[in-house]
Amino acid sequence: MTRLLVLIAGTNNPSNGVLLASAFAEGARSAVNDLTIDTVKLAALKIDHFRLEFYDPACTQEEDFCALQHLVEQADGVVIATPVWNFSVPAHLKNFIDRMGSFALDATRSRGTLKGKPFFLIFTGGSPGAAWTGLMRKTVSFLPQAIKYFGGSVLGQHYEPRCMEGHGRFGLVVDKRPESLARMREEGTRFARSAAHYALDGSLPIRHGMMHKAYSLTQRLLAIIR
Image 1: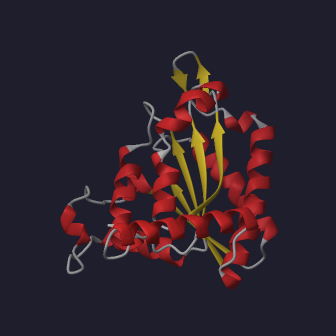
Image 2: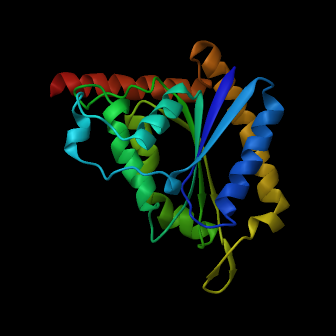
């Protein structure tokens, strides 16, 4: 069995991110027969803000966080769908990334423990694609970098531009973009197949597997230097 976790970071309803993630999941289901998909809306969870005590092995984490930690650990692939707000992601997603260090890093906090787990990132925003390429991609670069530091592998990213009904009016628009939904289904198909291989033997697509090994080696070398 292959298991995917879809994390929804947006708060709008209806949501462009949710619709894109749903198309992604549809493509995933078409590619892998024995597939389970868990979908979680981060804003609906009660997760405390990060504090250093959360790194304490004796610390008792709250129920919602423990449940989400279990889903991440059990997943063979994780999809994060998030809007870009004011050049970053919503605070509750950033907080969860901070909190992940309690289980996605070893005791030295210098090596990731996710063993190459595949991730896919779906971003939505009001800016055009050129703004994403030129600036906005840099402002959210901490997200894929944190995932890699935790030992995960980012197999792909998608930015959906101009998610606005008009000037200054945000709203649902991707339901009128069949090409974007089709692309998400294609990405979901590819990602699910990669996740299925990962579930079977821990393997990744060749390029991503080599990148993960190189990054892991760098982490080990840095730990020795420290």
